[in-house]
Image 1 (spheres, rainbow, N blue to C red):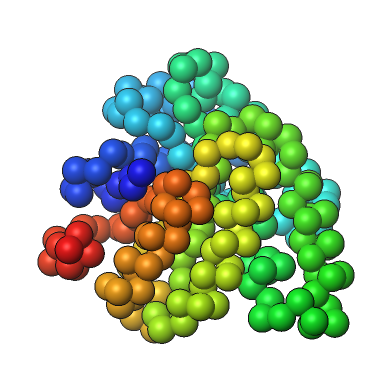
Image 2 (cartoon, one colour):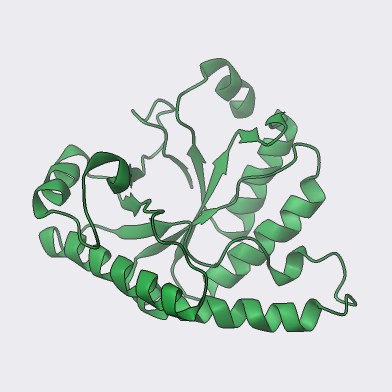
Length: 215
């Protein structure tokens, strides 16, 4: 299924309700109940928490982030037990993944793979708390679909180990401009094939660009 995480749900696709608490309300490690209540009342869609204030540099900081975010997920569910809740961009740890290495003969491949899997394990408490996992699968370069595909597949495969629904987020922009429509359609296709879902995200809606994607 393809979800719409663009403000206002302009595409008409099933919406995903993305919260940005750090932009909306002052909080330390817990969201105010009034904020949770107002956000739940505004939309009946599944909730994706985008909280990017926790910097993970080692195991201690990862365990702290995992515990704190898990408590926030539980606080949302305490207000509305039936609402599905996920967290964006936290797990699996983004940046390096074993399948993104060009060849497994790379001398650093095995040690990097073990380290990455171990670091992902630091978030067990959070993964147990969420209903679904939201991946950040934005691309760096508009022309290198092969490298992106290896990275995306590795992230999806790791996320699926949690036995939860996986929602990969896709954005039409990349570091060198707007992603080519053919490339973006390949991104959607890969996510649908391997994750079963894709999420279209943007800060604003570009109707002309979206119409070319739909075709």
